[in-house]
Image (cartoon, rainbow, N blue to C red; front, side):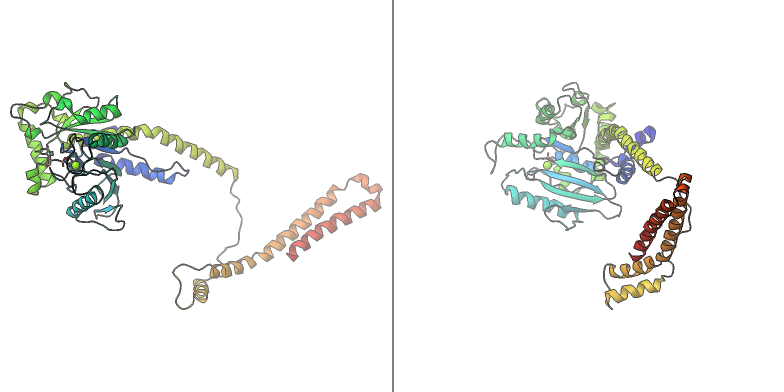
Length: 434
Ligand code: GDP
Ligand code: MG
């Protein structure tokens, strides 16, 4: 597995490389029973950082679709829980928890709906709310994973924001990233002071040993001329266990001109390959590298879960084998064919008789009972015959039980034979009467 998985890790969107692996594991889990047979739970991925740092842009690039409202005036003001749901049909659509059953096939419309919902709860004057927006994206090309786009950290209250907006947003972000299974994408724009990054500061609080934080540095293309983020990407400024990835997302102009995600990726690749400052840093530059890092973490997570899964399968295997052995060897016998003398026509007639000319949506029970009763009657004769055999056998055994000493007491012997025979006969007749 290791080699092919390694090769597949180069896939560009999040989870793509592990989709076949996770799917076959989930198939196995679905066949196990017991209450802990829930699916293979994958960690949530949350993007955190200052306002306009590029969180939504990074998540979109990872999913490979353009559907999140972005821009200087349209920032994320409610947590967006984006659940990717894999399905087998070719169709792709989005569905909101607040509008169940309504399928959004147009991703532009999804963007508008997110904005409308944000305004509904958080007002249209920069207000922020902790009430989530739940969006599910159904697609054949995704992994069942949840991404969370969070409101950005702000300092100065604007519009309808309360005076304690900063601490409120920090608390809200912590709610998500404190979970040990949450992978944190700490997003910092390269055109601001990286050493003061709010994202890294918060991530360190939630994940002190840095085992689940990936540093993402955006906007490398618009840094002050003459500066670059090389030292930062190498971890020389603030070391991070899982390291940093530098990315170039679409600029506002690109968005205004509807530049596609694909074009943006091509631009990013050219950017990193031509700028001397980033030579030799290909392992930590570009959205595909970020996806690769995430895939690697997902793979590690799955590997960690495998021994437990194997143990569960083994335990069930032993239990089933034990149960199987308890039934003993198979007994060969000529049993009665349960369907003999019932034709398909008989079944149709019985169903029609009970359902009337209109028929019924579900198969009614009554014709089944009528047909089964008819078949059970067929068991009567062989059963009575069987009872007779048993009776004869028991009489024979009872004779054998009379010891030779009883020959001396002929009356007692006769009485005993009588009592036993009467008892057995009564049992047979009782059974016949029933
Ligand atoms: P968020 O508030 O953190 O979700 O940030 P957005 O993803 O909405 O991005 C804010 C603005 O920055 C948008 O206008 C983006 O087009 C722009 N932006 C984000 N990343 C980059 C980048 O890498 N380069 C450039 N030039 N612009 C970017
Ligand atoms: Mg955003």
